[in-house]
Image (cartoon, rainbow, N blue to C red; front, side, top):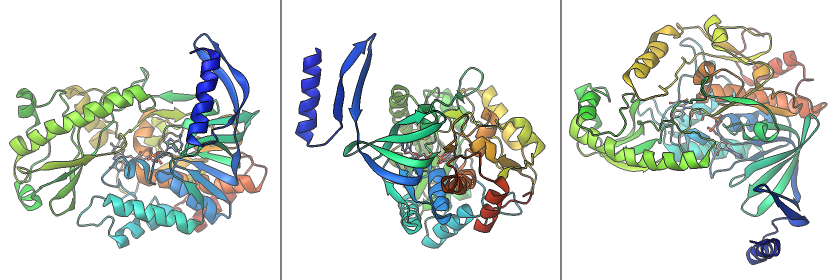
Amino acid sequence: MDRRGFLKGAAVAAMGSGIPFGVRAETPAVRNGQVTYSRTFPVKIETDVMVCGGGPAGVAAAVAARAAGARVFLAEAFTCFGGMGTAARVPVYMQFGDGIRPLAAGFGTRFRERLLKAGAISSNYGSFDFEAVKREYDAVMVESGADFLFHTKVIDVIREGDAIQYAICASQSGIWAVKAKVYVDATGNGDVAVQSGVSFEKGDSMGKMMPASLLSSWIGIDWDQWRKGRLSFNAEIDRALADGVFKVPDRHMTGIFKSANGLGNANIGHVYDLDGTDERSLTKGYLRGRESMQEYQRYFSEYLKHGLENIRLIETGALMGVRETRRITGDYVMTLDDYVKRAVFPDEIGRYAYPIDIHPLTADKAAYAQHREEFDRLYKYQKGESYGIPYRILCAKDVKNLLVAGRCVSTDQKVQASIRVMPACYIMGQAVGFAAAMAADGAGDIRRIRVPELQKKLKDFGAYLPNA
Ligand SMILES: Cc1cc2nc3c(=O)[nH]c(=O)nc-3n(C[C@H](O)[C@H](O)[C@H](O)COP(=O)(O)OP(=O)(O)OC[C@H]3O[C@@H](n4cnc5c(N)ncnc54)[C@H](O)[C@@H]3O)c2cc1C
């Protein structure tokens, strides 16, 4: 299309929708396959703290920042809170404590109590009632007094010097900006940090990341029969692989978790070589994930049986279950050595204890055996043991008003495989919420807050901080 056609097309599109998608300030230049153009967007929201992403880390951050007295706006790209735990259908929580005491104390333990009371999780059923979990997330956010929007994706930032000035959001009504004093990247993928120019790492030394899983819900399970059979979900996997039931020789199966009579939520199947920051890779992954569910249905009903004869798939997650993408570089990179030492940090904002759970990067027997060895024996903590989480892994390098929380914080791949689970995201989320509120109340600089004061506020909020 020539330039005149391009301009006309854009103008007609904007007029046709009646949506003010921005006012063009200069004509576009196309050079070497790159388009440069500029537009003017309204600043729709001004706030103290902007939280980007409403998964476990983002909700904890927003609630904590409000508790600290800050004005908060949260932008969520999808249609609900909870991230992987709701939209992707992750079926259960990993451990909240160290076997003796609660570690994800504060927002985490209070939210879990709330879910139990609402019947969204129960000690009998175990797995989530996803709709109830979504409602409870909605309720804590509404009660917190934070402003928030769904269908609102942060697509860029305007950074001047060492500070973010504006976040640019693409929403149902068009493109607009948010002005905040401090920003929290809780997007899971570190989108905002990358838009701000912060460096990151991905995967192992070859860039290889853990496989994703398209999580799923199933009906027609006779749980009494299944339990009587005392089988593991991969009991017949070798026979099924030999018979060619599966396209990929994946032996690692976490299983199906009971959510109600006849119903179960499953963490089964892996989509290998998926990059959760690449839409083409994701698209391919959804196709493979959906296809593999038919293979599992056959495996359950024809090979495992014992109450699974009539099992049927209800649905797969609306979002791909992505375990790992970018790890944003912070002021400190936490490593396996820290995990092994059960490290204590002067600036710790919490402690956690989940094992190193790197799902095998390839679908072969040796990789699976290594995973079992690491998870069950090599790095497993004893009751009462935990590692410290330093504030510095939440501070995005060289940006003075950007904090990061959740599965994309500054660690090596092994530590990410522990710290990525939801209770740890609550610990990190509440810490960045308080830190962001303190910075917004001061110089707008996350490195100029007093860490002992942050630790005191966290303790008052209920956090477990034995070393502060
Ligand atoms: C297959 C699988 C199984 C797992 N099993 C367990 C388990 O059994 N127990 C457990 O505790 N944990 C488990 N986890 C881990 C856990 O669910 C996630 O690591 C955790 O949810 C991460 O939380 P988060 O807030 O960092 O990110 P996410 O949960 O990914 O949430 C990020 C949120 O940000 C939004 N977002 C993304 N980009 C943008 C943007 N640019 N602008 C605005 N919003 C954006 C997303 O829509 C999403 O809502 C599992 C994960 C996977 C994938």
